[in-house]
Length: 236
Image (tube, rainbow, N blue to C red; front, side, top):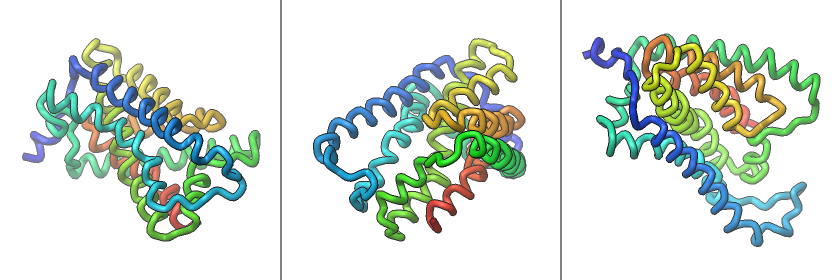
């Protein structure tokens, strides 16, 4: 059973459809959320934002749609998410994922320190989430849990799942796929000042996917990479 689960999940002729469905849902959700809240928060002081409480979790809805697109298309056009992407981690997925995640953390630390010296006083999306939560433990805990587990799953389904298999279907070399998915991963975060760091992290996380042929390993690597940011978000 373990050997069967360890098999490379291969290619998908519907990969680009799944990728653009997820990415399109993400941007549509952002537009809808912006349109729905623009007037309501037009006069809010950004230096003293309101505490949104449970509404804070809506911030993560676009991210959920990143992974929902590939899952839905996999159900309808493929053999199901676990069969197509290899989502249930094996021992090998865990070992490779933890090692790759550690490498991603190291890259983030080294390049992050360098980039902060070049561009100091840069805030991150985590700071905004913490401000909107008003320091409420329950909302910070929910947000931190999503950063640690939810975001890695949805983002990996999109990049190292749907996009990777779409490119593999057209027989693009694996190293090129690794680089392209890392580029998409970096720009997906929309933090231009640390694109270089995100690209390096994407290479490390994607290496897990390339070694095992399964998305589960890159999810483990991504979650490992996100552990410290999640802890920082919760503890402040």
